[in-house]
Image (cartoon, rainbow, N blue to C red; front, side, top):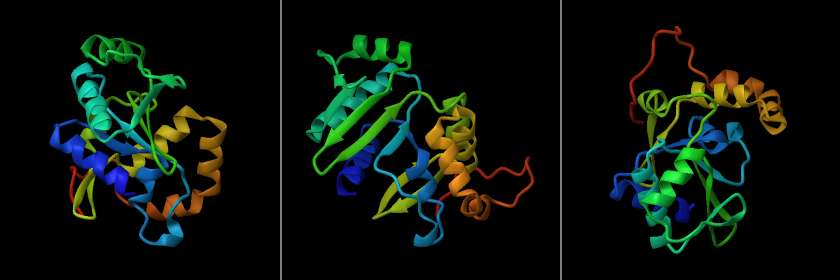
Length: 180
């Protein structure tokens, strides 16, 4: 957890825009440990912006974390030209560290636009660190739309817990990115 919070702190310091998504993001909405979901990694959704991605890579490098793409070390030089190629392909960058630390920088969240997800985000505080998290609705809809077997299994296995966590509000009654 310390490495993740250090990464988030560095991303904020460099003004990198991102939101936490996936199972780790869903866990921020859990009201108790009994509702938390098991996952091994952190998934961050970044806008398709080469300069933003380059800054995110630089933060990881500053923390001595390894970067890979498609299972291979990320090419060098890690410059704006490479970031443009990665954004063009919407390729995933994985960030690896000690003690099985893994975070993915994703430029895709199903078919959601980053600005839509950013607008609906919620900011949580974790050990005095602000964590922007995609709305639980976006996280669940993303898993449903992608429909990978592991996503279908997650949704089916945790159907009741997710139903309990999802807000009971009207479809047009959306909260702005608030804080807890």
